Image (cartoon, rainbow, N blue to C red; front, top):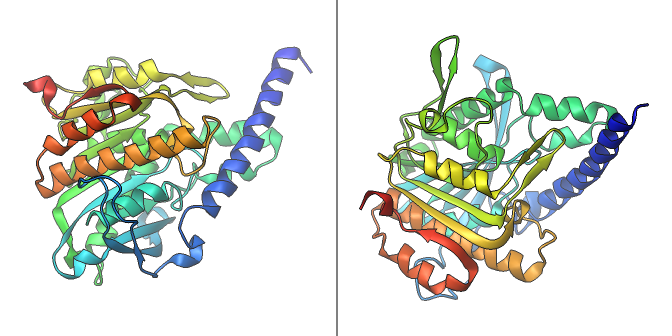
Length: 353
């Protein structure tokens, strides 16, 4: 075996072991009561800050196993359903997980958004979910390549639109969701999915390929990767004109076999988004790529806790602003309170002032 291939295999082994642990940790801490917590009610902790960033509303998790018959594809999902929906229809945010994740991940965001009165629907994407880590070492490369393929990227975007349609068409939940107040959020590969649904397009055979869903009115992009090798980023993102929150950290690096993307790329995505869009940027000092997941990464418990708390707060304030009509002022007040944690903050719409 030649040395370059041996090095790649060793690196793949580290990724495989790491990924397996991530999957187990994500599944274990995805919900306060584990996967059996579906359909139980929970109340968010009492506010620690005197602002809408820290709510105390009740919610309950609900699990679905949908099938998109047209694509012969299962689409599992977990819904964090706010109890306030009993009185009045609520906004909706659909969350797309990163490479190797599932609908059980990023639960800290789903719980927080639901406690703010925003339904949070987390979708699982077959082919790029945690199943990719279960393969043996020699098939891992193939799994990663297929997971990041154009076919899977487009399938993920279709999963999101399908999930929106399923929930809106649900006899139990559809009437309680505001069809005019829908956002899509995602981390890493999930942010790529959100951009596709939000209007990003690439050229294929001289034509623009787009998966834009006009029902989507806002985006939350956490650790958004660039569209590498697809040409002018400004052109690709030109049709993303909905309000968008970009979140990253100064140590936000994506590193898998054959691919590397760092914090500078996150800023490039923000800068490339159309000037027609109302956008905001939050950059956390020393925050890594995986710090935005449910698990505690190598940055240590204290920074993990701070960044997760801050991420759910700023995203919640953003969603309340663009979907529920709240003022944007609390976002700026929040940034002042979090100055020690922030490397950079651009208020919503500041680029257009």
